[in-house]
Image 1 (cartoon, rainbow, N blue to C red):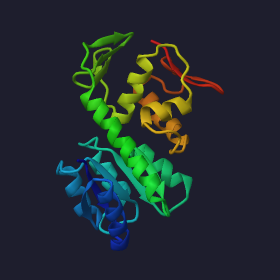
Image 2 (tube, helix red, strand yellow):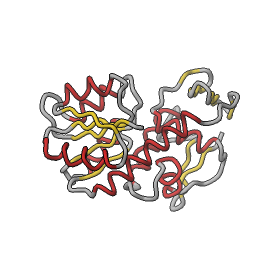
Image 3 (spheres, rainbow, N blue to C red):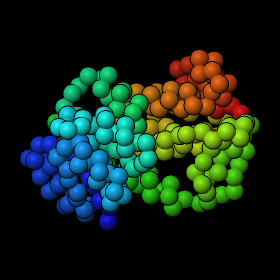
Image 4 (cartoon, rainbow, N blue to C red):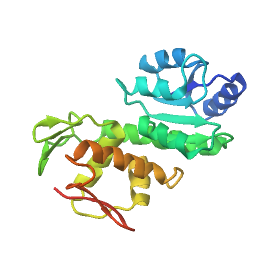
Length: 227
């Protein structure tokens, strides 16, 4: 049974989400400000975090920034704001997904299930021997990546994307395919999330992200990896 941490300052919303997620079989933890939420998120007691943006003590973006310094727990940002810059900022800070209020409980449950399923599959997956791909060495047992012997600090999402490409060298992969197979659900998320993740990954993989040599774009088709 998975445990969901809800960090939200409106008790009525926490009660509504809790009631419906408990019916889906989840255990629930809750916090009503960013400071308490961060402490609970770092405790290791939760499997996924629903994180509101507008919080007292510490806003959701700051909670996420601090959380990502030491944890790769799946995080779904919950916001009442429609501005695309807020969504992109959350993704760039390390959110796995976002959902905008008002949202349907059915959609929220689908996003939670997809993120937890992806995490469980990754943790329980086959541990193969380290593989070398050009300058990159991938150790799936340790979930680590190096380039020319230098460790790369990747988020879990970035690591998953890189693995997907290295398993398909030179194959063009569409944004839709990445969303379905790496994010783990069928188009619930905005495809802009893919572009943000790819840009962040390119900044970490390439010597000069403006002139990439490995993570390439095929205009109008998607992305591909060359090693």
